[in-house]
Length: 149
Image 1 (spheres, helix red, strand yellow):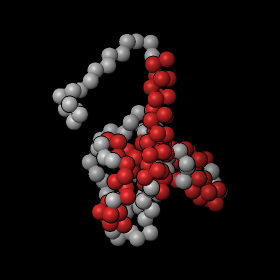
Image 2 (cartoon, rainbow, N blue to C red):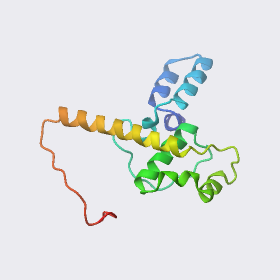
Image 3 (cartoon, rainbow, N blue to C red):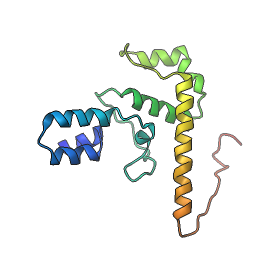
Image 4 (tube, helix red, strand yellow):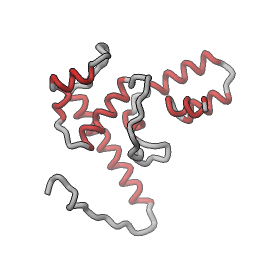
């Protein structure tokens, strides 16, 4: 169970490194590097590269890192069709800072840049998929549940 916890907090690479290494100081450094990785898209996909499955909210005692906060904010804005400027709303700031006055809320420009980065990476992944896929692909739209109809 402890290995599963480490993998959930960091990733499988840290677990592999930890199992091989006996140098605890090096492991702490590696864990910090993995925890502060600058790749925002790694927080929004599963190890196989697919999007994470929708699950019920699981509370955690561990606060999000700045990069995780940026990723979750960008994902929330996109999935729920929110305006990017919502991060500047006083009510949103009050909710986010409740009980955590040192919490860093990403700016509107940061969220916008993160959404563009995620879009580019997603487009590249789909392009790679279509280049290598041997079979047929059927695309359809869901007009019945779309809020834009």
